[in-house]
Image (cartoon, rainbow, N blue to C red):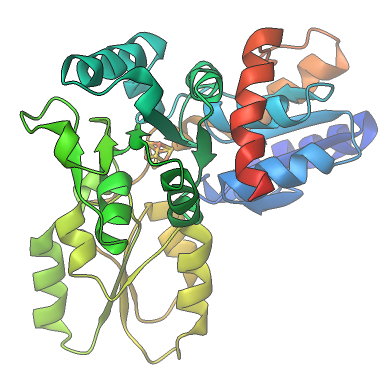
Length: 330
Ligand code: SF4
């Protein structure tokens, strides 16, 4: 079956079965194009949780489908590929606890630690954070969440993205370190877990130097999952949605080099737009979802086989919801 036939079958089945399809900005074009709603992880979770259809097919990575299930436990959520974000995979509950213990050993009591997890983490890690009265954040609201968390006068344990934690700390004039890097955590405000995004790590200061030399008036735009030294040299740093809004606000004659996932950058606009890398920074896990996978998932719903359905234990859902909801309350 070719792509056109597959798309037609997907649309027919989708309408017949009362299914909504959502796709993250980093999905392949052919999957992105047939979604009812596209957005970043927070937008998709919010939209999907309030969608009227009972079935949701989520084209993204595992933690995103889990976030919908946490927010709307009665909705049946399916993922054509349960692909795990490389960053989210860098932390589990045991690693989280090991970091807390490292801080305890360094003289910081558990009661003096307030965890904040980037939304790119598993439901279990979010639940652990919820149990410690902590928060979930996204790249667009991390600054606001951290400002709120600091009102507790506790040390902030920021997981799992060390770059986002360091970039926000820098922006807020706070001191940050990476847990286990040999420094004394008592001297710092934000203690970052040593995780990172393998895609956003690909952008380097040399890439910025290359584009600035070639096009002296170019603007450099990066995502806060990029290295701190890369963000420090950028003209604009923002979340996926903030990058889209910023680039759209520029005159078409303005050259811009964007440091984020390839599929999204190439859809941003045709003219005067460059990917801030000599390589092709595609997210391998986001790219795993194909039209055939979406079709197979719809077929499994039709035939009541319900493959690749997201399920979360009641206890995990309860605590992870608390951490997510604290973010929404703000
Ligand atoms: Fe995870 Fe990075 Fe892929 Fe985003 S781009 S899903 S953070 S690996």
